[in-house]
Every structure is written in C-alpha cells, then in structure tokens.
Image: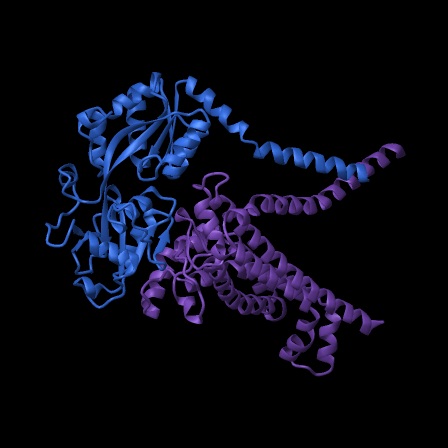
Length: 299
Length: 298
C-alpha cells in the first residue's frame, strides 16, 4: 500500500515537472521557422491588420503559411523571447528589461515600424462635449476633474474607461496623455478608472453610457461613437484624429506600430516584412483605419 | 478462474483507491505550487505595500486590499441572491411542486447551471448593466451589484441541485409523522423537513458560495475592474475589481518570475485559503450537528 502511494506520487511529480519545464515549448518554435511557416503573435491592436496582411500574402504566395494570434504586446514579445514565434507584434517599443531578458535567452530583437496608429478619445454621441485639451484629458483620468460640467458639458459624473494594464494602449496612453510625455511624472490613473479587458468592452460601455469617456485605437472606433478633437495645449488648435492629421503630426496622440524579429530577418520572414512596407500592403493599413508609414521612414 | 477474479478485484480496488487519494494529492500539489510561487512575494515587497490600497502592478503598487474587499463584496452580494432563491426553488421542487412540474423544473435548473459564464457575461454587458445604470440612476452599470446578480444566477443551480437532493433524502416517515400530528404543509417544511436536511442545505450554500468566489469570466466582464477599496455598503453600487479577475486579466502578460508574477500567485494562495476556510467552517458545522444528533439517538 505504501509503495503504491509512493509510486503514484512519483508519477504525478514527474508529470507535473514535465509540464512546467521551460524547454518543451522553445523547441517547437525552432523547428517552425525552418519550414515555410511564419508564426506571428502579439498586440491586439495590430491583430486585425496582421490577419489581413497574412490573408492577402498567402493568397499571392500559397507556399507560405502564416499563423496570426493576438494576446497583447507583452505576450508577443514574451513569445519572441521564448523563441515560440518568428514575428512579435507590438504597439509599443520593446522595454529595456525585455531586451535584457531576450539577450540572456540568446534572442536579438530587431525592430520594424510597420504602420502608425492614433488613439481616439471617445464619448457617447449624446454628450455635447466635442473638444478637450490634452491637459484636460490628463486631469480627468488622474481624478482632478470628475464632472462633465468642468469641461463644458452637462452636469454628469465622468465615468473613466481604460484598457487593462497589460495592454500596450494603456501604457501608451499613460505615458503620452496622463503624464503628458514627462518621464519623471508619477501621475497614475484615478483609482476608480474602469479597467476593461477588451476594446469591445470600452466600445459597448461608451455606446450605451452618456457619462463615459474612453479611448481606443482609431481603427477600432465604430462610426456611431463620437471622437473628441484634441489640442496639444490650451489655446492651440483642436484636431480630430484622421489619417491626414496623424501623418502631418498635428494630432497629438499617435504612435508607431512595430514588428520584432529575432536578429535581422532572413528567408521568408524577410520577404514578408519587405512586402509589408510595400504600397500594396500599406493600402490595407489605410483600409483598416490605421495610418500607413511613408516608405522612407521604414527600416 | 478464481485467481483471475482476484487479480481483477485487486486492480480495480487499487484503481479506486488511487483515484480517491489522487484528490488529496492534487490539492496538496496545487497548494505546494501556489506557496512556492507566491511566498517570494514577502521577500520582494514589504507587507505595508501589500496592505496598501493602491493596485497598479505595472508601477509596483501591489496593494491587495481593494481586490480582497472587491471579491468579498461581490461574493456576499451573490450569496444574498443565490441563497434565498436557491433554497426557495429547492423547497418548491422537492416539497410543493406536482410531479410533472418537478420533472420539467429540475432539468431546466441543471441546464442553467451548464450555461458558460462568458455567455452570462455578454448578457450582463449588453442588457443587465445598461438597465441597472438607468434603473438605479448610477454613473455606470458596471458595478459590484451587476456582478453579484449574475454570480447569484450562476450559483443558484448549484444550490438548488444540492439542497434539493438533501431535502429529497429526508425519509418520508418524517413528513408523514408531522402530518399525522396535524401540521400544515408549511409547518412540516419549516419545522421537520428543513431541519432534518440542514447539513445538506448548508453544504449547498457553501458550494454555491465557493462557485461564486471562484467565478472569473463574468465578473471580469461586468464589474468594471476598478481597484477601489470597498468599505461601505454603497460600494456595492460602484465598480470593484475581484481577485479572480485580476489574476485572469494580468497573468497572460506578466514576466515569469517578476514581483508582479509572485504577487499574482500570492493572490491565488489567498483565494485558496479563503475557500479552504469556507469549507472547513461548513464541515465543522455539519460535523457538530451530526454528533449532536447521534448523542440524542443513543
């Protein structure tokens, strides 16, 4: 009887440690990259774009298979570090810690700018407020302003909506809007900011709640929601987000979108990335509501 | 012939024993894993940081109090919904409903229990939360209360199913005895059947509460996930962030081995200890009532 329990424990411990081991997954990735197969993972902001690219490219090059998954910028970069993907999508630049972790794992992340994105600040169409300064948005999200009447609206409480902290959009919004690009600023989101797990959650809440203020990638804002025109500083011109205003840099909340590869890309990954910055692929970028990169700015 | 039968029996009994022991083993292993990944928390952050009221892990604010109170308030709300509804339904199905009604109701309730919680979350976002915002005139419908209602709905089938079995197991002679003494149907239920099934009903409540506290997807979708410390009753009508939603939302992105990672496991450990506490409390009550019953009978 005792020997039986002992055996059972040994078996379970063995199963347990095998499933936890970090070695099993990295080997899968290594064998993938050698075939005509590209594994592409990361930012949820980019996932639709990456899917559209993959579809078009596979239609033209049937010998190549591309698998695209979302999960967030951090997930994508973590997978690149674990060598389970060939291309990681990120809506933010890779962090220093991540580069260090990658290097210790023998991975050399190389950055490619593949499109631009603007973050639109959105409200319910019933809300009369149509323009805000960056400072006002910052004060709203940090909790200094909590009523729409303080920014020229009706006497209603402001319900602040944000993406979860693991979203690249969240971090970008924190740095660019809440802290107004100031690195030493330690302002945080007001504690009662609702952290919603998806873009869809924010859109659904803004659509039905006239108190809500949210933000989302320009490509994901449905036509029935109202976008806010934003001025860099008080007295400046209020600018609505659009492809034109992002490209001439007059819209203040816009960013580059990235793909990361392990080392300079070679073989099919290189051909794919070269195709992505071609005018044909960048047309898809514009179709999806993102902003195409001009050919000279791509690396 | 006889030898092979013995051999079969030997294997079968061992297999059954093994599956019995495996439950203990799995729980022990899970707890061991949680402790191994969660305990480094204390080395990496201070206790005062853990007990602060700010949860913002990407900037190293690891106050778990808002998450703890968030989970508690949603669970208490869910219990307030699920317990009366669940026990009421169980009493109706087991004691009052005619046979044909009972045969329709029971499978329906069990079907409700099989609904994926993410589907309920969808209903919550699209129907319940706008309704609650307008009906109660709140700033937003994504509140602890919305979560409680849906979680209550999720826990009801568990409570009904277990409580109904317990009521059903009360010997028919008890009821007949009560009727023979001239008790009404209500008196029979309240004074005889229900007390006799008390330990089973209590188990039902505890299982329901356990289901509610561990539920993740629905609360993540409808409670708004704002890590605000819930201190007063009014917090039920404002957004909260639960422990389960925090783990689910953040585990996918966290760097393996970081402080944030360890704190998430520490939260898992706290959750584990809470449900362990609930279970121990429940079984000790059941155990005590059983002992008293034995003393009276002997």
